[in-house]
Amino acid sequence: MSSQPPSVVKPRSAPAPSRAEAARPPKPTVERDRPRETERSAYGSRIDEIKKQWFDTVAELKKVTWPDRETTKNLTLVVIAISAVLGALLGGLDWVMQQLFALI
Image 1 (cartoon, rainbow, N blue to C red):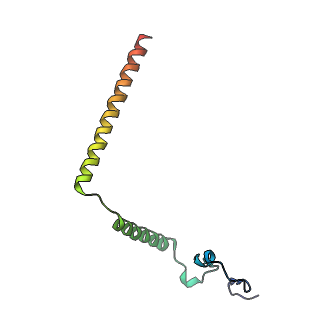
Image 2: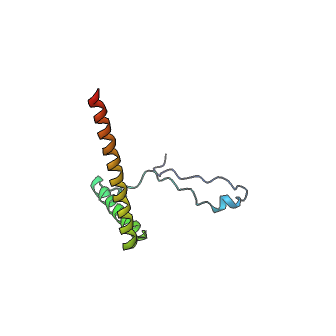
């Protein structure tokens, strides 16, 4: 028995892939039995995950197309108006239901 990790065996020569198959990215390889030098503590790997999440978030925020001041103002007014109308409607419905139940 050898102590080397198992390697991925490539299939024997296959027919030429179609255009769709050729355009696909290659399948990821599976890593098995990592060497001891690359192992990290749970604390270190958690810190790395937090760093990666932070940098990914910053990169995504740089891609955002933010609305201008006028659009923001208009959309805020729309939200406030819809909230006020729905609040009045639900308040009125609640008052009507209270009056009906008071009669019973």
